Image (cartoon, rainbow, N blue to C red; front, side, top):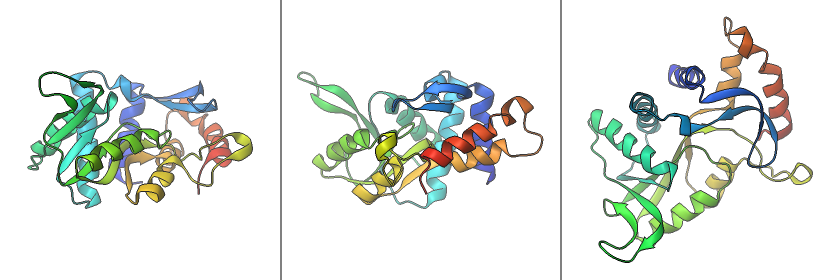
Length: 221
């Protein structure tokens, strides 16, 4: 596990953003862990999170011209990531959408820089491809090109019901459908590696088997 990924998992655990126990996911599954990016809710933690996003994007080698954040969580994320990139010498325009079109002033659903060129979509997680699909439509409608999705944590879970699980995770389905990569700061493999480290807090290590069992049932190859 590289240092960036390891540091991000530790950072998320220390802040209580990544928690362990029993949680019901949006898909109705009982998960032994839960990641709530909404808890990056002060300037210091959001700034640090944005640093992880920015470095992950730069490390990827993806060529991009601007960033796009889907409402609502993507709004604060894309703004912070643009600042983090600027601090690294990469001044990058960004835009985000509002849920309802505005009929006065500048109008429309887009706020920020004009949508153009190669666009990276910035979000927290992908639980289904619906949000990405909406973002892709908005970007393409502006004659720009979506080139990647950048998220914090990839749960690497197959979608669907227990009796009809997809062969692919939500991130894999996005890649297959839109022919673009999903970049994550960390993923379930990194979480497992963190829990398996020597010296990890014993209160956390006891969840290792539960996460391993959960992955065996829902995890994508």
